[in-house]
Image (cartoon, rainbow, N blue to C red; front, side, top):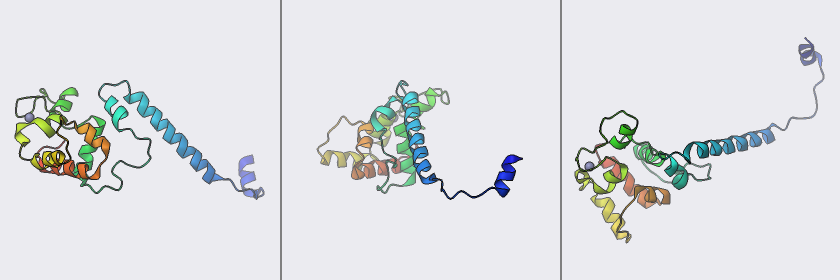
Length: 169
Ligand SMILES: [Zn+2]
């Protein structure tokens, strides 16, 4: 009752609330809480420690900002960064598939197997490896290293491979 009366009959304060200051405080708190959450969840978990150790940037901008890549490639790269792909090895870990093996039967279907080793994709990766050899990089290749460099040319070549293969990463 008193609150209603004050709202209806009370005087307006001439002091403005500095809500823009409060917004900045709230945003900073949210950002710090998110980082703490990620650290707590990732760092001691073998499957997501890669994300924390390799990819977590203390930047508020998405990693693909300023780099033109097709959406499908961005989604796949995000999955690789998070350590949660649609490949057999990851689906096997969460008990969706019985076998972690690749269709080639030679190895588990991991991201690095798909990118650098699988015989089924030898022709499709030819331009990617040619590009890397041209940059005097002769391997062994590790996809996480290329993704963490955020080199637009390398990412474009990686995206081209992702678009060429018949499997969603
Ligand atoms: Zn294979």
